[in-house]
Length: 224
Image 1 (tube, rainbow, N blue to C red):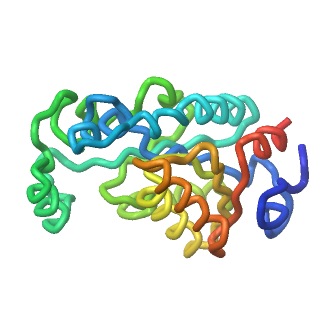
Image 2: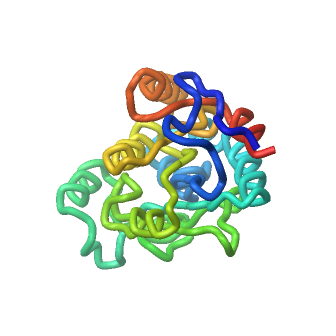
């Protein structure tokens, strides 16, 4: 196993050597209502084919990481059935867009925990040894025990995949950076609702000081 991973910015991690005991792989918000061609995003008039196009690469990374002993973590965004953990601002914005939180849809109530649309798509579904973090916000650290669980395992390296790049992925990276985690974004395993938005967000990841970027092969090869 390599001591450092080649990235577009610097040999990663920036401090110390790479090993799987320090590392977790985050798979962010690959939920049915976001990825399905007839889910919530589709109801907003969005073409979800770009989002779903990375499911194959993400599944490849998940399989390799599990086989090599990397802790895999999935996140799901959603709220309690009574919306008690959803800020009124979010509730009101959703109403304004014509898709209120908790409304009935093809996959159950929109963004409500336990509903089919809230769950993770089959192609990248969690295994029994994976962690699943249910979050009421965009970032994976907000109102969750993720930080506590990582620190209890002495994990300080986070490899990031997920949707949406400019929202939930970006929020999680910023939260992680403020907490001292060293992040590596796999650029061919993140996507947003438009390809041009994906490209712009990945470019921002490349130039900002929040972590490092590389394609998935660099990470997979490092695990060999």
